[in-house]
Image 1: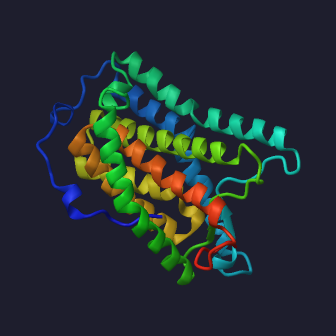
Image 2: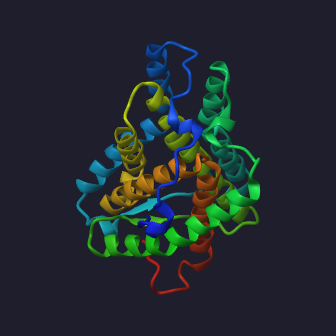
Length: 276
Protein backbone atom coordinates (compact mmCIF):
# COMPACT_ATOMS: atom_id res chain seq x y z
CA UNK A 1 0.00 0.00 0.00
CA UNK A 2 1.56 3.29 -1.00
CA UNK A 3 1.06 6.99 -1.51
CA UNK A 4 2.78 9.45 -3.83
CA UNK A 5 6.30 10.58 -2.94
CA UNK A 6 7.28 14.24 -2.73
CA UNK A 7 7.23 16.09 -6.02
CA UNK A 8 10.96 16.76 -5.80
CA UNK A 9 11.61 13.12 -6.58
CA UNK A 10 9.62 13.41 -9.78
CA UNK A 11 11.34 16.42 -11.33
CA UNK A 12 12.06 15.64 -14.94
CA UNK A 13 15.71 15.16 -15.84
CA UNK A 14 17.15 15.18 -19.37
CA UNK A 15 16.34 12.06 -21.31
CA UNK A 16 18.95 9.33 -21.14
CA UNK A 17 20.34 7.68 -24.22
CA UNK A 18 18.07 4.70 -23.55
CA UNK A 19 15.01 6.93 -23.74
CA UNK A 20 15.94 8.95 -26.80
CA UNK A 21 15.25 6.02 -29.06
CA UNK A 22 13.94 2.51 -28.62
CA UNK A 23 16.71 -0.10 -28.78
CA UNK A 24 17.39 -1.52 -32.23
CA UNK A 25 15.20 -4.51 -32.97
CA UNK A 26 17.11 -7.77 -33.27
CA UNK A 27 13.93 -9.81 -33.76
CA UNK A 28 10.70 -9.06 -35.67
CA UNK A 29 8.20 -6.83 -33.89
CA UNK A 30 5.51 -9.50 -34.15
CA UNK A 31 7.69 -11.94 -32.23
CA UNK A 32 8.43 -9.31 -29.59
CA UNK A 33 4.70 -8.85 -29.04
CA UNK A 34 4.19 -12.60 -28.71
CA UNK A 35 7.17 -12.81 -26.36
CA UNK A 36 5.75 -10.06 -24.14
CA UNK A 37 2.39 -11.83 -23.87
CA UNK A 38 4.09 -15.11 -22.95
CA UNK A 39 6.30 -13.51 -20.29
CA UNK A 40 3.31 -11.78 -18.68
CA UNK A 41 1.18 -14.93 -18.92
CA UNK A 42 3.89 -16.80 -17.02
CA UNK A 43 4.28 -14.11 -14.38
CA UNK A 44 2.49 -10.94 -13.30
CA UNK A 45 -0.16 -10.90 -16.01
CA UNK A 46 -1.43 -14.22 -14.69
CA UNK A 47 -1.16 -12.84 -11.15
CA UNK A 48 -3.35 -9.91 -12.20
CA UNK A 49 -6.09 -12.22 -13.47
CA UNK A 50 -5.81 -14.36 -10.36
CA UNK A 51 -6.12 -11.26 -8.16
CA UNK A 52 -9.24 -10.15 -10.05
CA UNK A 53 -10.89 -13.54 -9.53
CA UNK A 54 -9.92 -13.44 -5.85
CA UNK A 55 -11.38 -9.93 -5.45
CA UNK A 56 -14.66 -10.99 -7.06
CA UNK A 57 -14.76 -13.87 -4.59
CA UNK A 58 -14.21 -11.48 -1.71
CA UNK A 59 -16.94 -9.12 -2.90
CA UNK A 60 -19.45 -11.95 -3.15
CA UNK A 61 -18.82 -13.37 0.31
CA UNK A 62 -21.27 -12.66 3.12
CA UNK A 63 -18.74 -10.56 5.02
CA UNK A 64 -17.39 -7.03 4.76
CA UNK A 65 -14.03 -6.69 3.03
CA UNK A 66 -12.26 -5.50 6.17
CA UNK A 67 -13.48 -8.63 7.97
CA UNK A 68 -11.70 -10.80 5.40
CA UNK A 69 -7.94 -11.37 5.29
CA UNK A 70 -5.34 -11.52 2.54
CA UNK A 71 -2.27 -13.41 3.75
CA UNK A 72 0.97 -12.62 1.91
CA UNK A 73 3.37 -15.10 3.50
CA UNK A 74 1.65 -18.09 5.05
CA UNK A 75 2.71 -21.53 6.19
CA UNK A 76 2.74 -24.14 3.43
CA UNK A 77 3.13 -27.14 5.73
CA UNK A 78 1.67 -26.29 9.16
CA UNK A 79 3.28 -28.18 12.01
CA UNK A 80 6.16 -29.42 9.82
CA UNK A 81 8.78 -26.64 9.92
CA UNK A 82 11.46 -28.29 7.78
CA UNK A 83 9.01 -29.21 5.06
CA UNK A 84 7.52 -25.74 5.33
CA UNK A 85 10.98 -24.22 4.85
CA UNK A 86 11.57 -26.38 1.76
CA UNK A 87 8.27 -25.18 0.24
CA UNK A 88 9.03 -21.54 1.08
CA UNK A 89 12.44 -21.69 -0.63
CA UNK A 90 10.96 -23.56 -3.58
CA UNK A 91 8.30 -20.87 -4.02
CA UNK A 92 10.81 -18.03 -3.85
CA UNK A 93 13.18 -19.69 -6.33
CA UNK A 94 10.51 -20.61 -8.89
CA UNK A 95 8.98 -17.13 -8.72
CA UNK A 96 12.30 -15.79 -10.04
CA UNK A 97 12.24 -17.98 -13.16
CA UNK A 98 10.41 -15.35 -15.29
CA UNK A 99 13.24 -12.93 -14.49
CA UNK A 100 15.71 -15.51 -15.78
CA UNK A 101 13.55 -15.81 -18.91
CA UNK A 102 13.66 -12.03 -19.40
CA UNK A 103 17.46 -12.10 -19.02
CA UNK A 104 17.66 -14.85 -21.67
CA UNK A 105 15.40 -12.97 -24.08
CA UNK A 106 17.47 -9.80 -23.71
CA UNK A 107 20.63 -11.77 -24.45
CA UNK A 108 18.95 -13.16 -27.56
CA UNK A 109 18.52 -9.64 -28.91
CA UNK A 110 22.14 -8.81 -28.19
CA UNK A 111 21.52 -6.97 -24.94
CA UNK A 112 21.34 -7.90 -21.25
CA UNK A 113 19.64 -6.93 -18.00
CA UNK A 114 22.31 -4.24 -17.66
CA UNK A 115 20.34 -2.31 -20.27
CA UNK A 116 17.57 -2.11 -17.66
CA UNK A 117 19.99 -0.96 -14.98
CA UNK A 118 19.71 -4.28 -13.13
CA UNK A 119 23.30 -4.71 -11.96
CA UNK A 120 25.68 -3.67 -9.19
CA UNK A 121 27.64 -1.14 -11.23
CA UNK A 122 26.33 1.77 -9.12
CA UNK A 123 25.57 -0.03 -5.87
CA UNK A 124 25.99 2.89 -3.47
CA UNK A 125 24.02 5.51 -5.45
CA UNK A 126 21.34 2.89 -6.10
CA UNK A 127 21.19 2.02 -2.41
CA UNK A 128 20.92 5.67 -1.41
CA UNK A 129 18.20 6.45 -3.92
CA UNK A 130 16.29 3.30 -3.03
CA UNK A 131 16.43 4.05 0.68
CA UNK A 132 15.19 7.60 0.07
CA UNK A 133 12.26 6.39 -2.01
CA UNK A 134 11.39 3.72 0.57
CA UNK A 135 11.45 6.29 3.37
CA UNK A 136 9.22 8.65 1.39
CA UNK A 137 6.69 5.98 0.48
CA UNK A 138 6.64 3.74 3.55
CA UNK A 139 4.81 5.84 6.14
CA UNK A 140 2.27 7.27 3.72
CA UNK A 141 1.64 3.78 2.37
CA UNK A 142 0.77 2.47 5.81
CA UNK A 143 -1.57 5.42 6.38
CA UNK A 144 -3.29 4.75 3.04
CA UNK A 145 -3.77 1.08 3.91
CA UNK A 146 -5.24 1.83 7.33
CA UNK A 147 -7.56 4.43 5.81
CA UNK A 148 -8.72 2.12 3.01
CA UNK A 149 -9.42 -0.67 5.46
CA UNK A 150 -11.31 1.63 7.82
CA UNK A 151 -13.48 2.79 4.91
CA UNK A 152 -14.34 -0.81 4.04
CA UNK A 153 -12.55 -0.73 0.68
CA UNK A 154 -9.77 -3.12 1.62
CA UNK A 155 -9.27 -6.53 3.11
CA UNK A 156 -7.16 -6.92 6.24
CA UNK A 157 -3.68 -7.61 4.90
CA UNK A 158 -1.67 -10.14 6.92
CA UNK A 159 1.94 -9.81 5.71
CA UNK A 160 3.03 -12.92 7.59
CA UNK A 161 1.43 -15.86 9.32
CA UNK A 162 4.60 -17.96 9.33
CA UNK A 163 5.33 -19.94 12.49
CA UNK A 164 7.75 -18.49 15.02
CA UNK A 165 10.74 -20.61 13.96
CA UNK A 166 14.39 -19.73 13.30
CA UNK A 167 13.96 -19.30 9.55
CA UNK A 168 10.93 -17.00 9.67
CA UNK A 169 12.79 -13.67 9.39
CA UNK A 170 15.29 -14.82 6.71
CA UNK A 171 12.45 -16.21 4.59
CA UNK A 172 10.46 -12.98 4.94
CA UNK A 173 13.48 -10.95 3.82
CA UNK A 174 14.08 -13.31 0.89
CA UNK A 175 10.41 -13.04 -0.05
CA UNK A 176 10.65 -9.24 -0.01
CA UNK A 177 13.64 -9.25 -2.36
CA UNK A 178 12.00 -11.80 -4.65
CA UNK A 179 8.90 -9.60 -4.96
CA UNK A 180 11.04 -6.55 -5.65
CA UNK A 181 13.19 -8.20 -8.33
CA UNK A 182 10.28 -9.81 -10.18
CA UNK A 183 8.09 -6.72 -10.18
CA UNK A 184 10.64 -4.04 -11.00
CA UNK A 185 12.56 -6.01 -13.65
CA UNK A 186 9.42 -7.20 -15.45
CA UNK A 187 6.81 -4.47 -14.88
CA UNK A 188 9.14 -1.49 -15.19
CA UNK A 189 12.37 -2.32 -17.02
CA UNK A 190 11.32 -5.10 -19.38
CA UNK A 191 7.75 -3.98 -20.06
CA UNK A 192 8.66 -0.37 -20.79
CA UNK A 193 11.49 -1.47 -23.07
CA UNK A 194 9.30 -3.84 -25.05
CA UNK A 195 6.43 -1.36 -25.36
CA UNK A 196 8.85 1.26 -26.67
CA UNK A 197 10.12 -1.24 -29.23
CA UNK A 198 6.53 -1.99 -30.22
CA UNK A 199 5.89 1.69 -30.89
CA UNK A 200 3.89 2.64 -27.79
CA UNK A 201 4.06 6.25 -26.65
CA UNK A 202 5.60 7.01 -23.25
CA UNK A 203 2.27 8.01 -21.61
CA UNK A 204 0.56 4.84 -22.87
CA UNK A 205 3.41 2.66 -21.62
CA UNK A 206 3.34 4.40 -18.21
CA UNK A 207 -0.41 3.75 -17.89
CA UNK A 208 -0.04 0.11 -18.96
CA UNK A 209 2.77 -0.57 -16.47
CA UNK A 210 0.96 1.17 -13.61
CA UNK A 211 -2.36 -0.58 -14.23
CA UNK A 212 -0.60 -3.94 -14.43
CA UNK A 213 1.05 -3.28 -11.05
CA UNK A 214 -2.29 -2.35 -9.55
CA UNK A 215 -4.04 -5.39 -11.07
CA UNK A 216 -2.04 -8.05 -9.27
CA UNK A 217 -2.63 -6.31 -5.93
CA UNK A 218 -6.40 -6.22 -6.41
CA UNK A 219 -6.81 -9.28 -4.15
CA UNK A 220 -6.14 -6.84 -1.28
CA UNK A 221 -9.09 -4.66 -2.27
CA UNK A 222 -9.67 -1.28 -3.89
CA UNK A 223 -7.07 0.37 -1.69
CA UNK A 224 -4.41 -2.12 -2.73
CA UNK A 225 -5.23 -1.53 -6.40
CA UNK A 226 -5.26 2.28 -6.26
CA UNK A 227 -2.20 2.54 -4.03
CA UNK A 228 -0.12 0.34 -6.29
CA UNK A 229 -1.24 2.15 -9.44
CA UNK A 230 0.12 5.33 -7.85
CA UNK A 231 3.31 3.48 -6.93
CA UNK A 232 3.54 2.31 -10.53
CA UNK A 233 3.34 5.87 -11.86
CA UNK A 234 6.00 7.06 -9.41
CA UNK A 235 8.35 4.17 -10.18
CA UNK A 236 7.96 4.60 -13.96
CA UNK A 237 8.81 8.30 -13.64
CA UNK A 238 11.83 7.53 -11.49
CA UNK A 239 12.97 4.87 -13.96
CA UNK A 240 12.65 7.36 -16.80
CA UNK A 241 14.72 9.84 -14.83
CA UNK A 242 17.44 7.45 -13.66
CA UNK A 243 17.42 4.82 -16.41
CA UNK A 244 17.95 2.06 -13.81
CA UNK A 245 15.64 -0.40 -12.09
CA UNK A 246 18.11 -1.18 -9.30
CA UNK A 247 17.10 1.77 -7.07
CA UNK A 248 13.49 0.67 -7.49
CA UNK A 249 14.37 -2.90 -6.55
CA UNK A 250 16.09 -1.60 -3.41
CA UNK A 251 13.15 0.66 -2.51
CA UNK A 252 10.58 -2.10 -3.06
CA UNK A 253 12.63 -4.64 -1.11
CA UNK A 254 13.06 -2.28 1.84
CA UNK A 255 9.34 -1.43 1.90
CA UNK A 256 8.34 -5.09 1.84
CA UNK A 257 11.00 -6.10 4.38
CA UNK A 258 9.75 -3.52 6.88
CA UNK A 259 6.15 -4.58 6.24
CA UNK A 260 6.80 -8.32 6.52
CA UNK A 261 9.27 -8.34 9.40
CA UNK A 262 7.57 -5.46 11.21
CA UNK A 263 4.24 -7.25 11.13
CA UNK A 264 5.79 -10.52 12.34
CA UNK A 265 7.33 -8.70 15.31
CA UNK A 266 4.51 -6.26 16.14
CA UNK A 267 1.28 -8.14 15.38
CA UNK A 268 -0.71 -8.58 18.56
CA UNK A 269 1.54 -6.19 20.49
CA UNK A 270 0.27 -2.84 19.18
CA UNK A 271 -3.35 -1.79 19.01
CA UNK A 272 -3.21 0.14 15.71
CA UNK A 273 -2.10 -2.81 13.55
CA UNK A 274 -5.05 -4.91 12.27
CA UNK A 275 -4.47 -8.66 12.53
CA UNK A 276 -7.67 -10.01 10.99
